[in-house]
Figure (cartoon, rainbow, N blue to C red):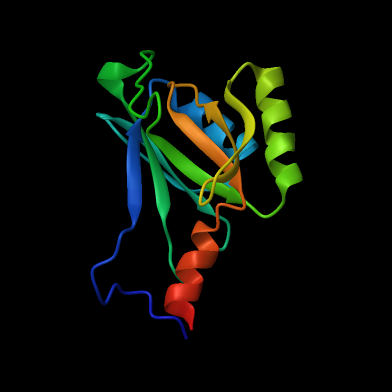
Length: 150
C-alpha cells in the first residue's frame, strides 16, 4: 500500500495568483495535460489545485489562487521568459497545442527547434499573462529518471 503521509521534505507545488480562476482553470485543463484535483474557498478567495491525472507517486500541484480583493485584475507573474514547462511525448503534440493556442489568441512563441537541451518548443500565455512552455525532446523527465531511476 502506498504511504499517504509525507515522510521527507519534498517540492510539492507552485502557486500563482489569478484574476479569473474559472478562466485559468479552463485554460490549463484545455491547453495542458492538467486536471483539477481539488478546490477550496473561504471569505478571502478561492483556489484550484491542478496536477497530472493519477500522479500519485510524486504529486506536484499547480495552485491557482483568486484572491477576492484582486478578482477581475490580471495577475501576471511569469513573463516574458519565466515559465511553467510542460513536456510532450511527440513533436506533433507541440504543433497541435500551438495551433489551438493560435486560434485562441494565446500563442506567445511560435513552435521552434532550439539547441539541446531545449528541444522543440512553443509557449502560450494563460489568462493572467503567465508563460507556459510546451516542449518535446527537452528530456527533463527522461534525464531525471535516468539519473535517479537506475
